[in-house]
Image (cartoon, rainbow, N blue to C red; front, side):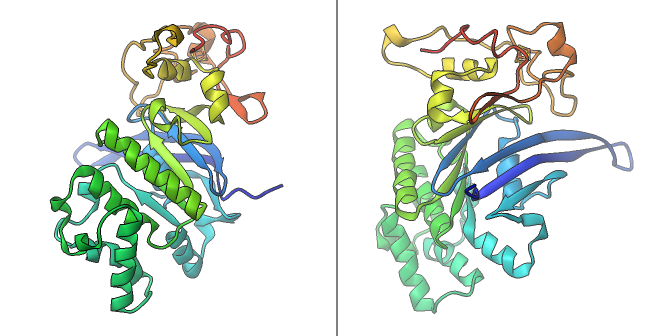
Length: 331
Ligand code: SF4
């Protein structure tokens, strides 16, 4: 069987909640709970869910920005927790991240040249002249002029700054880039330009992407596979065409129903979810979605659904996915 570029198995990440005079641990934010998925070379996984569902924590844990509470992450078949120094250095070169807010993630006091040369400096690559030339090449690659090298991040628009963030992320020719809400802060027209740029780079470099977003509309045209997260768990995953045509989980159906469809004859009924996402400090018993699910019954409140196979590659965690198959279908 072909080895996936990245495999995540049973990933858990809890953050401590502290209180009292001595700031003792009094609970946990259960940010990520038993998350498993894989990412193939050159392909895109869309990781979708409302804010606070744990999707960014998943992305950051893959990059070792957080230590997992439990679970395993394999990169090219190797457990990243067991990597030695040299392997870790190679991993850090291969796996990069693009953040939501390019203004926050780019050092405002550094010139674009310094920002783009930094990865080469850290990895001790090239002479000063070569690094400067490579930085210029990167700018061209993301559609910016070389004269931007001596300017500062605040001199650029949001879309241009995100292009600089992308240039920095691809500097070391990575194999996997985590796009953490990379286009969420941009205007819709700029969003599609940046998404197109990412897709062009993906084709040129055979890049794998994990595209984290809070709505399914953004990931629709970029993803090969989709995983939908709710309150720390993946509730449904399948290839993109399958999930848009045959969503099974009531939460996925609600997210899909929120995508604007210009043709009124193809519009389905909008499913409005009531209430807010519950606190990840005290997630509900049984199905975590039961407090907002229009189909919840007693069983949902006490028994947690396990992932079931709908068909090859399509998994869903709902007791009643089969019975609900024809309801709330999205056009
Ligand atoms: Fe809704 Fe019950 Fe399915 Fe959870 S298990 S999604 S509450 S129907």
